[in-house]
Image (cartoon, rainbow, N blue to C red; front, side):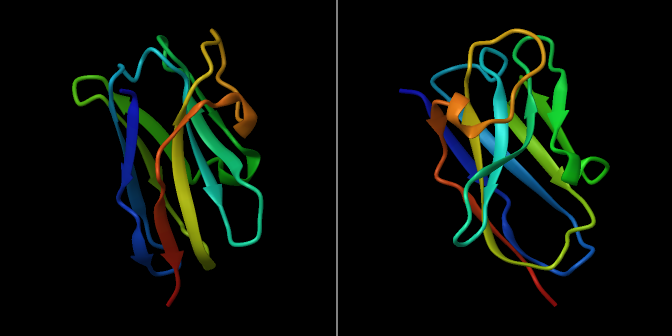
Length: 126
């Protein structure tokens, strides 16, 4: 059974950092494109970053370039999202997802991703 489990969320002060983890089971993380997405209250889910299958190239939304870093540890079958310089925001859920089986640069549209984790909440507040 294919499963993704996020962790690492929490309460952090503005300007702080977090590292989110996405642990996979039932498949290897280099088989699918893996993406990180966020959903704020009342807003649509949006892609923040992804790492491509096989080669591991990365894609970032313009708003997070320079602050977010996605990485993959094949030995631990886990994908990470390092978030720096966090900005104040309401509680936001970060999700990781697997898919699609495309080669080349991974895409960010949420509709292309098939398997989703349950999410981890991030709150940035002083």
